[in-house]
Amino acid sequence: MMANMGPSFRLSPASAALALVTAVLMTGTVGTARAEPSFDCKAAATPVEKAICADSKLADADREIADAYKTLQDLSGTADRERLRTEQRAWLAQRNQCAAAPSPGTCLGPVLDARRKALSESVPKAVAAVTTIIDGIAADPASAAKRLAEIRGGLGKGWSAYLLRFGPSPDRAKAETLLRDAIAGIDDSYARETASGVDLATDDGFLTALRVVSDDVEMAWPCSVMEKRGAAAWKAMEPLYGSNRDNFGAYPACPDDNALLASPDWKAVDELFAPMLEAASNRTGTIRFATYRQMGIDRMKSAVDPRLFVADAPELATLVKDTAGWSNPRWIAPGWGDRLRKAVDAAVTAWTPQIAARYGMTKPEARRVAEAVAAQGLSGSVGLITDNLELQKDTRLPDWLRGSWSWNGGGSEDTPFNGPAGKARIDETSICVGSECGGYDVAGQGEDAPFDPKEVPKDVKPAPNAARQAVSLAPVSAGSSLTIVPLAGGNLLVTGTAKPVVLKREGK
Image (cartoon, rainbow, N blue to C red; front, side, top):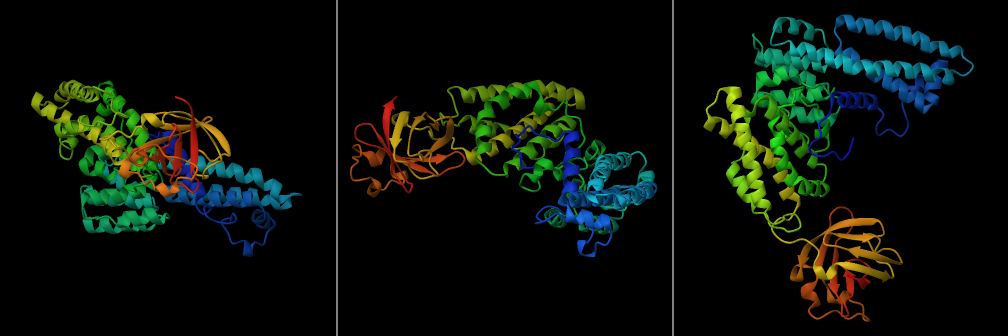
């Protein structure tokens, strides 16, 4: 679940279901030295139990069946729970017949796999059934309350608490008590602590905790909840974990076909940032997934109710002015700032009549909403980029460093020049050895480059003013920083590592 997914990522319903099943089936198996079934192997007495304990695959399957069965019990109403119990008893009887087989373990494999598959496929369906109940709260809160009361797990408790807080007969104290009970039932300690740390007395905090309870089973909130609760519900859906977990929290089940921030009018803006956004994503850790989450929620909100951006979005004119002033030629070509201004203004101009018609607004009112949407749309990309890229000075590799080079006598293992001999090609952004290329930025030059003349071997002569020309290179991803200085005769010395290396020019 650590896939490097870009800022346009959003889980499809099928992917969300797969993530849910994976999470359910992994419970109890992560971090253990040996697979453990759902029962204590020290007390195993029957041939079936002993066969399961003796085979790690069977033990995994038994644990997954037990976890999925418990999840389904917690998601089901009274009638469905009884049906599940009846099915489980019948299956256990079938499983136990393997005791009479010549090889109980061989017999158990397909029996356990079939049950595991059946339960796994039932979990997303059970979540969807609960979602349908929640979607009906606005139309018939009494019926929804009755059905939710039958669901004994965290999801039933959490949404019953929602009804008690926002329903026709509110009881805030009872709602908070019930939601805390739902939070306490979350197995994942990090998620449980996250939900426990919010202020349930506020709408934002209450809904954020309910989101964590829902995330525990990958439940996507019906869009009716987002429409009813407005800004507080959208706030609850924003980045929460500051890690790749934010990529896997379910998004609301709202259509985003008409999202302003996914429209053709905004495409020209996205294209201007795309190279920098990709580079910035490669230079940061899992915190980038929080940015992707925010951008995904913003896109969806721009489809459901773009008016909500007016309260919190940054001021568009200032944001565009600052961004258009970026100057690093590695990323910014001549005229880039003008293209940005035109692209943003074109999107705002195109959106304004759409918003005015949709909400019965005057043109100035609608343009204010359009500008707020554009400002929020810019802020996610701009924030990730400015946090990870130098945008005001030239970070390209200098001209005297570019060209083809060879060396004999390898350098340190964490440099590109670690082989006993080899050839390299250096351009304005990368060092390539064979087919392997790594990106580098100039992190310092002259006095800002950590060059120590004592590192120069005795048989090597630096070029005049070598210390002033020295450059410190920072790798874009893996590897150590390098300091490179020019030598007399046009060669280079790579220092800053345990073993300096001389690069001999082969051609430019």
